[in-house]
Length: 121
Image 1 (cartoon, rainbow, N blue to C red):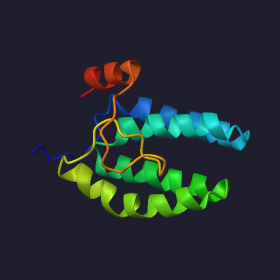
Image 2 (image 1 turned 30 degrees about the vertical axis):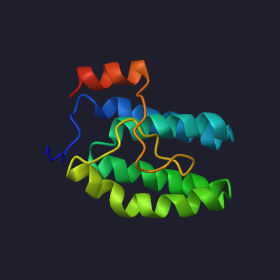
Image 3 (image 1 turned 135 degrees about the horizontal axis):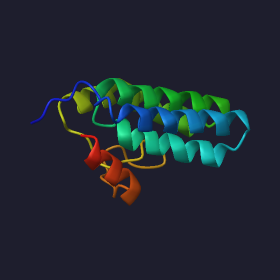
């Protein structure tokens, strides 16, 4: 078991960029594009407790913003246990983090994100 605490400094800019892009799309009411970038941020931040929890918080707020009760309710357990699962290294790798997918389902990581992850571990 590998315990994760801090995201590598070289990975943070990629993570923060995804959040910023999501925020920009959200402010322009392009909800589909915003969500896509939240999912990408989730994949990058998932192994790290703080970043994993932060993305679920952003997803929760997204659900509130678009008045999606399923997303709001679905994010609550993810907020409560996501960071803990990251800390102990028990994450479903590649999971995109939304209530539209089972929380423990492993998923394939898009190739360009896998490359970023591999280069900045």
